[in-house]
Amino acid sequence: LKSLLADPTLLEDRAYINGAFVAGEGTFEVTNPARGDVIANVADVSRMQARDAIAAAQGAQKEWAKWTGKERAGVLRKWFDLMMAHQEDLAVILTAEMGKPLAEARGEIAYGASFIEFFAEEAKRVYGETIPGHQRDKRITVIKQPIGVAASITPWNFPNAMITRKAGPALAAGCAFVARPASETPLSATALAVLAERAGIPAGVFNVIPASDASGIGKEFCENPIVRKLTFTGSTNVGRILLRQAADQVMKCSMELGGNAPFIVFDDADLDAAVEGAIMCKFRNNGQTCVCANRIYVQSGIYDAFAAKLKEKVEAMKVGDGLEDGTHFGPLISEAAVKKVEDHIADAMDKGAEVILGGAPSELGGTFFEPTIVTGATPDMAFAQDETFGPLAPLFKFETEDEVIEMANDTIFGLASYFYAKDLSRVYKVAEALEYGIVGINTGIISTELAPFGGVKQSGLGREGSHHGIEDYLEMKYLCMSV
Ligand code: ADP
Image: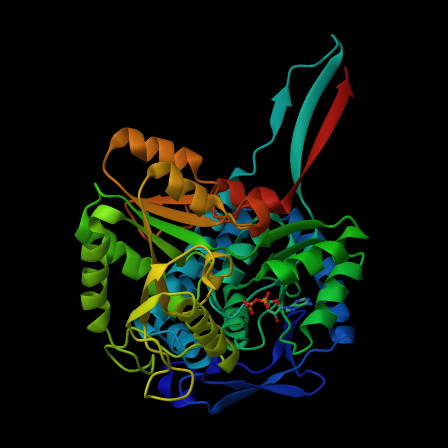
């Protein structure tokens, strides 16, 4: 892997604690899911070392918070510039440890970096408020201050961007940060640390602690009184565990949890645009994102045409090693991920669905899987309630607007939703009726640092991105002054 990089020093297998790259108590293996080979043995940080990182963050945070917003903005901007200058290398590292096609990895680096750029700018705009007093001699002022030390736990599906969209606002606000990346993908995180150091982010302000013992680190984050904020992206199940653990300290939590995105195509939709949108929305990252369409509802009048067109387009796309040109679908992250897709297909077929494309592991072997389309999907099938997190597109047929809204909302999740329609009053009514934090209207791609990303119901708490994103790392203080 080193030989593929213009700057091989970006490939860092040690943890980054208090401004130093350090060994763990042992190592764990990181493999390339496309080939199964070990690409690095990465520092395995123990709970004791995590405690050191948290203590270092506490020391550094006090100074960091004294910097002006403009000063913090300056080094964050440098960090952004360095990420973009090394976009290609960061993308290669990302694809090697995670599997997504290189073009998507480049896109993720730009997306990830955009959070550092955006929140660098926001560092200057942490405005307070003055409120007319309640008595003649009283003056009310509201100031915003950093929460303190923030700790993150992030997943493997966006190894760069899931960290930057937390670290960006945290550092901009004046918090210090301890990141525990997913054990599948720590190298994208340690590469960020290399660049953070070069950018001049002070020692202890940004720490990366790869660790195989997720639950031990999670407990340390929740039980250590220095940590005042926990930010997590991952499954709803783990989110529930962390929320319970965090309750003892009444810790502030941001949770970006699972989704089960409906993608609805009404009869009046632009069919070609809807097919294109569905492909991007369903198959990006091989279906392994929490905003991927999980259930595709197509109105009866265009159901057959939609299915045929979708099949034709997806059939022409290529499964392969993400580092090879022309690959649309990389491998899935693990055997367990393959099993889940297989289970969902088998369950659907048992209950009367028909596979019109794919349906099986790819002949490439490993964890490669054929992109799959299933027709005749019904609400009793597993994917109606459970996120597949893989390249399986189930097509449900519906008749009326009311019927599809009821089906779309019939889930504990509420992250992203999508629909294609032209009728203006329908657009408003459906957008308002969908119980989701995000609604894509005539588009299958909704992620941008400029907008608040987050879910309702059991998809999470808080928002990431936009000027709202920094609020999750700020405390409000009310000053009551008698004059
Ligand atoms: P995913 O399906 O994306 O792997 P998970 O919720 O299982 O979703 O994992 C998200 C992150 O949470 C990963 O970094 C994982 O290692 C970590 N994790 C898993 N279990 C726990 C736990 N009990 N406490 C803290 N972190 C955990």
